[in-house]
Image (tube, rainbow, N blue to C red; front, side):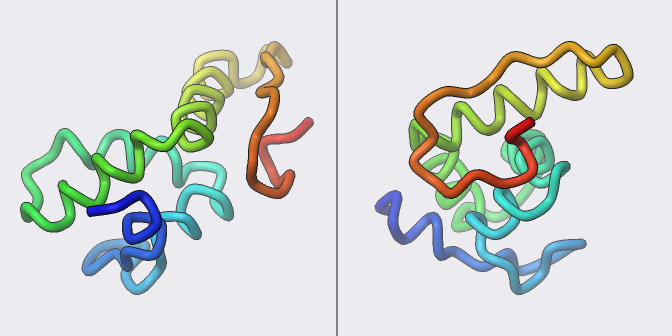
Length: 94
């Protein structure tokens, strides 16, 4: 699956049913962490392929790292800025 196809892949189940992987990662503060967690779960091969392709995109890697970092330091006010994101600035920009 190409990265472009992975961005548009719609989640077939769960809280984000019907939303694309890109929508999940960029519109919900917990979305990036959820996708990172989900790839290690028992899911269908098509979903796993889409997740692996999506999570391999450089801006997505940075987004997931930032989400995990924010979660680690939640409540401390300590965050590290993510530089050079190709997507529009959203919730992860402080």
